[in-house]
Amino acid sequence: MFSEFTSTFTDMFGAQSKVYNEKIRAGENMCQRILRMEALELKGNAILAADIDYAEVGGAKGMLMVCMTGTAVILRNPEILGEKTVESFKALAEFKARLKHLGQYRIAETE
Image (cartoon, rainbow, N blue to C red; front, side, top):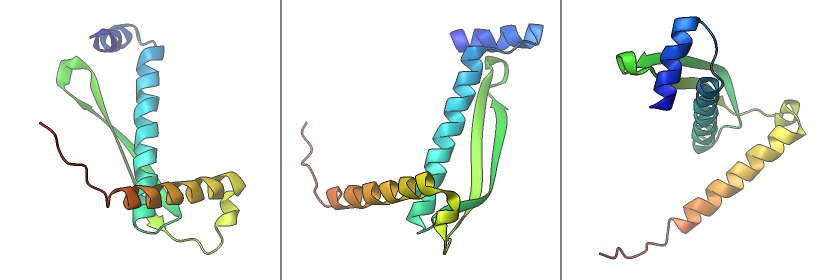
């Protein structure tokens, strides 16, 4: 409710809302994380031609949809991305392997 009101308020005065901008940034960050995980699923270690789009949904409620696309690729020399990025991809790959291992174990559902 508050963010919807803020969206309407900022539309009226042409100002930027900190809360609204933070929500947009959170949506962008979520899209980036999902895109990286999907690239790893495809055995990629980089994403080319990343594109981010915004669409208003919900009409007057001021809801915004954030979408991101890109092409997963395998770089032969991933070190050009920088040491921090290479380490991040390694950590994500290890995390993914652990999740896959844990997925083997099924916990009985309790009702």
